[in-house]
Length: 149
Image 1: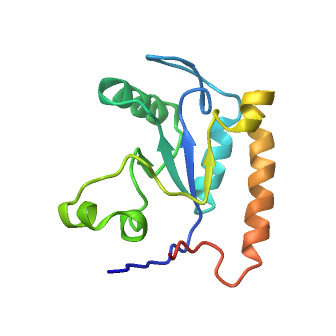
Image 2: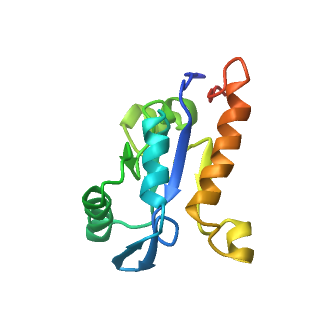
């Protein structure tokens, strides 16, 4: 059975280690300059923010506590947008309430992207500029933030 839902907001998944923070895993590290301001701006604009990390157990809890203490706003940590599994989960996952670790997003911000590997962290002001371009481009379409399959 095909399930489709429309997501009427942009979804952005952001990696934690070496993206939001300068990592010293298993420690939480130090937050990158402008990361909090830019993420909170997107959150205030209605962007659905997912923090996506390979951390599990206590180190995942530490990352969440760190973000909350720093005042970084987000909707989920290693979780899905409410419509995520309806669109991209398997029948077994949906029937049994299982969560996939892979999240679906319109944009993924991660230090392992090819550009970062070649050129290093672009800085959060550069990411803010790029996201402004994406938001502007997509706001000119009839239904900009759909994830129908």
